[in-house]
Structure formats: structure tokens, C-alpha cells
Image 1 (cartoon, one colour):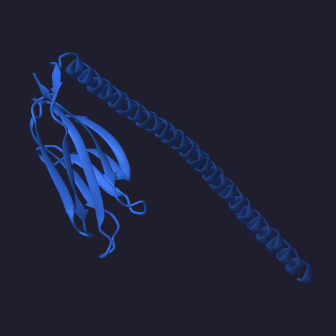
Image 2: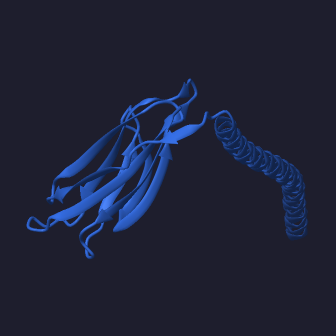
Image 3: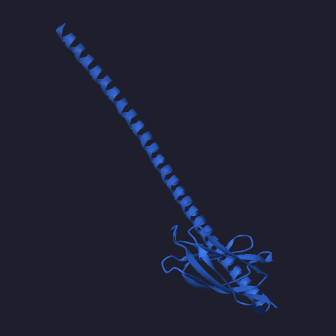
Length: 208
């Protein structure tokens, strides 16, 4: 009887061990399958990431190339516009009729802190003005600039104590811009009691 029980226990242990081994075997197989699947997915994900990075790099290179081309085109356009302007000025000089100097004109005055002197000069197409501006102060310069008939500043001489100047009736896309030009002279002292005197001498060169 005892031997039968021992045999039964032995057989049960063997059966239990076999079942456990079977379960472990299945678990190992499942783990291997899952590991293989995950490894495959990870490898594919890495490949997809590499492809995406390559495409991004290519797009960035194309973008940089387009930007460089746009800058080159803009620089070329600026150069062409400068060339056209230079050629237009040369044509204007070559086609400019002869001029005759008029009588020298003098204009002087005193400028307070806020006052501005505006000297109008009527010019026809291609007529010129040559002159000199002298300020009375050796400490504070004058601000001098020239406006065309539309009020646009066509020449700015900046801050001057004494300066010679010359300008010609400007041209536009429609042709020479004739009319009343203005020499503008301003006090830059910024002090109430500091008046600055000026003396303007100029000659207009008229068409014959």
C-alpha cells in the first residue's frame, strides 16, 4: 500500500514537472516570438526615422538653395536698376542743351532756434544752380538741403559751416521735373538765445 502511494506521488510529481516544463517552454516560445516582433518593429521604425531625416535634410538643402537664388536675383535687380539710372543720367547729360549763367544772387539772414529759411528757385528742365552757403557760427552748423517742386528732398548737404553746392532740375520717369525748387536752411543750435546768421550766394544757369 505504501509503495503504491509512493509510486502515485512519484508519478504526480513527474506529471507536475512535465506540466511546468511545458508551460515554461510555451512561455519561452511566446517571449521569443514577441521579442522577434518587437525587434522587427523597432528596426522598421529606425529605418522610417532614417528616411524621414534624409528627406528633411534634402528639403532643407532645397530651401537654402532657393533662398540663395532669391538673394542673387535681388542683388542682380539692384545692380540693373543702378545701371539703368546711370545710363539715364548720361543720356540726360548728352542731350542737355547749352546753358547761360545768370546774374549772381545773394540772400542772407538770421535764424533763431526754431526758424527755417526757404529760398525758392524756379527752374526749367535741365537748368542748374551753383552756389555757396556760409554760416556765421563756428560752433553750431547749419542744416542745408534742397527740395524739388513736389517737396521731396533731392539733395541733403547735412550739417555745414560752409559749403559749395550744385544741382540740376531733377528728372522723373515722365521726364525732367521743372518748377520751383527750394533751398532750405535751418538752425541746429537748439538754444533760444543762439541765432545763427547765414549768407547764400548762387547763380542760375538758364537755357539759351
